[in-house]
Length: 318
Image (cartoon, rainbow, N blue to C red; front, side):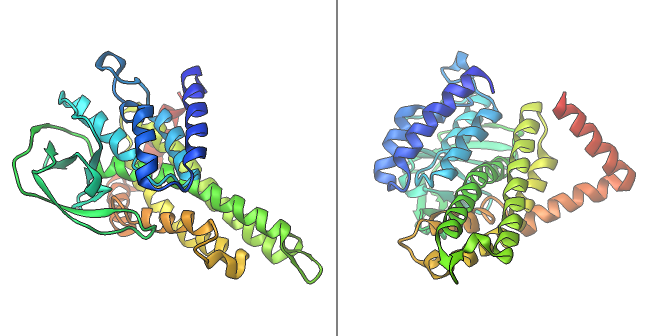
């Protein structure tokens, strides 16, 4: 880990621990003040000058602490605007996915959309918000444009792909948090005269959970490395689809080993599992990313797929 990333992680760890389970109204001002939004903006443009590995480290910590405020969205929005040579306005920026939904859209001062290769910035007053909620109870709003864009430029990025990476990164932290809660519970809960952790069936279930958490971790790391290398389309499709599998397998285990307490709103587990269940379908569902991955694999063919995977692995290792 570079010295800059170490300092970034230390700052994020302290801040996010303080903001764990804090509502948006209290969390967002402190995140905005910390300046995470310009994490990917080059230093010569007034930003932090970080890379996607830095973004992964920060987003993972936000997922680990169930931070209830946008972080990925302003980071990606500012990065896209900087790449397109467009100035970013003050306030909260969020992303409009291909579905038309924008996380925390009702709180946004401006939104960024990417349609048909054109990146557009819409200021408040140029878009309408139909309020909705994620499975975690956070704003997930439908955006419709009612006025002209404040600025537009050609852009070759994949906004939904970057959003999908962000959700995998956050999920890697949330999976760890849910796993830690499960481990703590089975080590303290006694049944038939011994801790639940002593039962072989519980041990087997948690071993399966750890595999799923490790898979999401590895997928997120591969995406960050590929993004820094300049081409992550394959890794993002694979990672987002793999996240869906991990949620399918891991979330039921986390709740099963907790028993009834795991389903109560007062217990912390739902803060992670409900986010995980929502994130799997945000910025593209399992079906969307399975199709995208399948098309890439089919186009490569058997031998071509092996050569492509070996070449990508060699490039990322180098």
